[in-house]
Image (tube, rainbow, N blue to C red):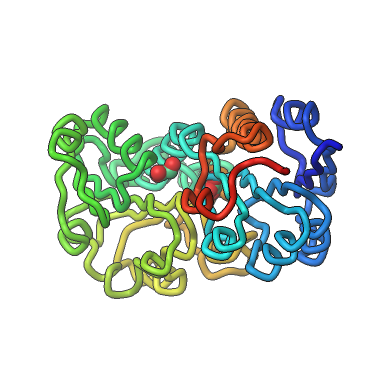
Length: 338
Ligand code: GLV
Ligand code: GLV
């Protein structure tokens, strides 16, 4: 009998076809997420789940699955803060993610937000469309829409993993000085080849013109950036986040932006997703908002789907999945559905 897999949303590319060659597949075909109760019920019936970052995979659900046939959760994302990893490991459930394949797309989107925020592109677009520019009767003015000069500025990268490093590499094209802060310091050689300097968070916040966040969401990074941190930033600086919304205390940020403790923010991720249209951030002109699209290119989303499939197929063949999150799980159960 072929193992069964429940996929919590339609995923693009050949990934799904790859899975269908080996598994009996059921895909949740609605655009909105399946309710928790649906995933819970499916977890008790299938051998494998393909999940998204919006699916809450808590210990109750994992245990309900593991008591039956659930052996692997293949997450369609690099982040996995929605999954209780410790619980999965204890129950012998493998968890995989999609690192690497989305690094460049996310770094590109980070740069799109840095430039859009620094040079006020969204505000400028609105200014043109609304007729406000026309009403000024001035084609060009020395004081119109002044922003932050990115070239030669100081970039502060919080979290120097794959994505942080890809963002830092791109900064060289802008002749920037790059500071970084991370729980782990890079080897000296890596620092030298990336042209980055390790500093503490305080120094990074005080000296950077652009602060960009690339940490996973953990207990330690929850609200890492709050009122104290925002008050340390320069009034001319901008803050960009393409990691997880909960790394920033949003209400402190909304105050920082409206009271001009900092000049602007570019946010792809939010504490509440989708962000409600009456949210305080939405009313501010000095913030550029995107709907969590860091990895949203045709190429990257297809590669993520293929990696999700490769993880499932390796497990099916009794091999360790290529991007296993909870490596300790191999001590609890060997890979394979038998
Ligand atoms: C997206 O946020 C991801 O974690 O892949
Ligand atoms: C994610 O791929 C990271 O390590 O930054």
